[in-house]
Image (cartoon, rainbow, N blue to C red; front, top):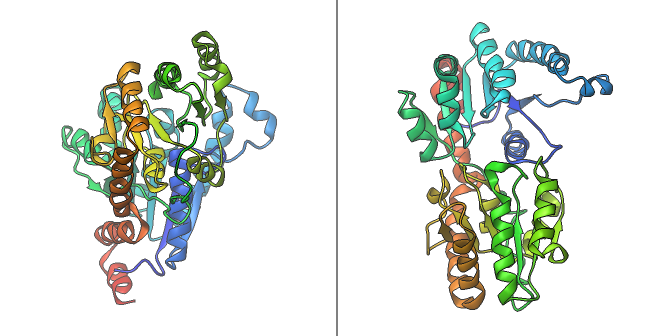
Length: 368
């Protein structure tokens, strides 16, 4: 089955701000369009109209929800399939769930592309209501075996379709070599991503590599706390808080990095890890969630236990002290990441769409 001519409503957030699910939504829409699919983007994070509504906590969601529902209803009359980019928490209840129910009411096949690393906790909190809505979807697709196992415990079958990495944008620079060590963390500044442990690990590394520096590329509610921690640890002059950067700037930032750190406590298939691998930068990550399915410890990167600054610092030091070892990890990661390129993932999405589309539409697409 080809994707040419398919009419797809792609429901999800778009940058700004930059973020994993927003970037994946934008990238998937672009790639589907290049395949000849007719993509209707139903953005869930459109700016508030009028702008001052965004300051009205408690009611501002209604100003976004009503026009969003109208866009969903209109799109359902024009497309072959809904593709809903879903996450945990309020974004599920406010945006993903309504899309599933609109698709059900309008008799449009619906693919829920669930991507939240906190799925297990969210299932426990939301329970029957969450499961009941998911069962209204035609297909549940997840990016990793980790999430597939979680949903299987609740008797919810799912198809695995991994994240997509843009190897044209994220690729080795050819400038690797001797330079002051530069550590990079590219996660949102939220508690589940535990940037504090990365800062503590950097403080230990700085004692051995006095010229080392770190960039924290992300934004979030813990920014103030993390800056205070950097001052407390005595590393403030060696740490740059770059904020959330667009993908073009991130591609350049990877080129300057010696090691990328992923200190998450909860995770699924982090784009930043795939981007680092594709950029030829060694990765040190915690061994949580779906990360071990994309990073093989000692083969394509190094894995350490969460909340362990000493272990993270030791792993980074092993790479800085042994460049041939770092090169082996880098080269293996570059080969590994090819399975997340669009030619591979395109075939998987074509299979998913073929399973949900009515016979005549699927046969017509297969004949193109």
